[in-house]
Amino acid sequence: MFNIALYQPDIPQNTAAIIRLCSCFNATLEIIEPCGFHLDDKRIKRVAMDYLNKSKIIIYNSYEKFLIKKKDSRIILMTTKANKNYDNFKFKKEDTLLFGRESSGVPKNVHYNSYERLKIPLKKKLRSLNVGMAVAITLSEALRQNSNL
Image 1 (cartoon, rainbow, N blue to C red):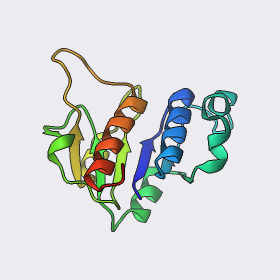
Image 2 (cartoon, helix red, strand yellow):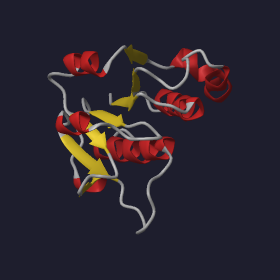
Image 3 (tube, rainbow, N blue to C red):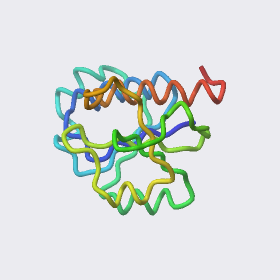
Image 4 (cartoon, one colour):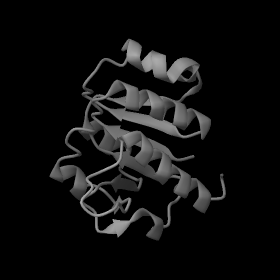
């Protein structure tokens, strides 16, 4: 089972869509606080609908607590600043796929603490995808590689 981790997400609707995605593909969602919203925000409930009750969600009060829990795991950071493409990487079922804040990504120390940094290649001069889209693309490839799709 893959883990999807969100580093201090700041858009509740994106987090809610990722909750639904994780529920549908049996992935655990890990949220690293602080968030830019309260987790009981009505916008989350509106988009996540009844999937909130069907999802496995773990909340970490800080990035440091997340790292302690993940000390024996591979953290794969998805970032536009990577050199290696996600489809040239062999995912393992125990991997944690980490995604940054919609507004600012992740700080340098998060880059340094990651096992690997990967990107989704985009057309030149375009910055990034919506984080929910990036999660869907990456999780789909990880599941495909591990024959779970």
